[in-house]
Length: 256
Ligand SMILES: [Fe+2]
Image 1 (cartoon, rainbow, N blue to C red):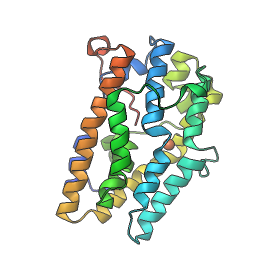
Image 2 (image 1 turned 60 degrees about the vertical axis):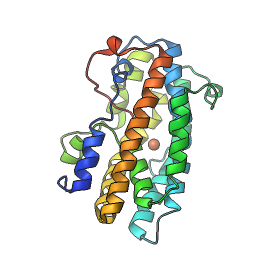
Image 3 (image 1 turned 180 degrees about the vertical axis):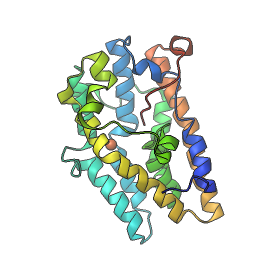
Image 4 (image 1 turned 90 degrees about the horizontal axis):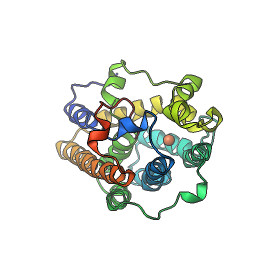
């Protein structure tokens, strides 16, 4: 059980409560064009999906000899780069299969034509994942990037992640955008594995962030991440031609 009254947990949960964006509801209902979907997913892939295993590896490279932390990160990295735990495949590869299910060729997914805020968030993630203190790098990736606006409810046990075929059947890309369930292996893999990675992330934090200066660095890094992520999402929404007035409903589904 993660103590939510731990001061660092409290501050990070307050941050994660804000990890939503006004453009998200548009992605959970019908109405986006193919071009708009492509803009969104190209950015997600190039900004942090493709290189997420490398970001984890960079953070792990800084971790002192603490077997519990190294174990958790190695397990996460193994799943992200091979799909070995969920018996699937590397998550960046599963993402491209999902895109093919939507009818997009994998050749469209490269680093070209990203909005400036995406470029800047991507570069910053690469730098921070290998910056001291290691606790800030690990929290940035495993709590902020991998976590979602549902973090508080997930820790409280009131949010239940959909799993398996139920998660696939109810996914907006299947419901509204014609993605065949067979292309949704990424959703299945996340449903199988993600819960245990969320728990590891918080456990590492409460066990190894005990020094006030380190705690401050962890919170400041995640605050910076939130501001940069919001600018990234604003930039992508602008490229999609969306405005807040188009999407004036509360967010229901969060992505990383
Ligand atoms: Fe993943």
